[in-house]
Length: 171
Figure 1: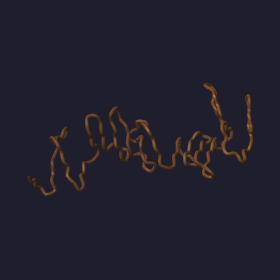
Figure 2 (figure 1 turned 90 degrees about the vertical axis):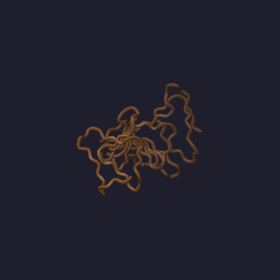
Figure 3 (figure 1 turned 60 degrees about the vertical axis):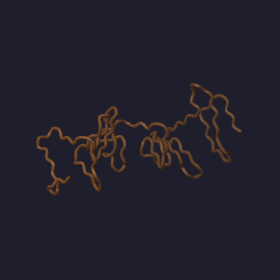
Figure 4 (figure 1 turned 90 degrees about the horizontal axis):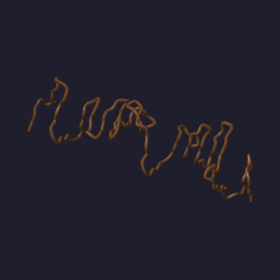
């Protein structure tokens, strides 16, 4: 049994045949465990047997299921969150939710009560409290009907036309 009373500057030992290391702390002002890494190696590694499960590298990046984290938080595996997940607003060129392989496509939040869908750095769809706006392209319905409840209106273009591939309108 090792008991330390008072302060220590260094505890340098290998623990062999120990089931666990427990640190009991009872302070409202002093941290319970502080790790200082003066070199460039990882600050912390947690293992389950021989599997490295958690890493805190020397730059502050945290890997969960990732031994070499590439981002501030790098999670390898399925994650479960309870409550809200909050992200930055993002922009059309850098959406706040995007795939690692396609960083200029995804979701962004251009203002209160609004969500935008971006593809190739260009907004394609905006949903807000006023409705839905489709931008930068035609609306295509493939393999189904486009059902509209209410009026179909066109605004702000004097060159408006409706064309049909068969040049006929049937009722």
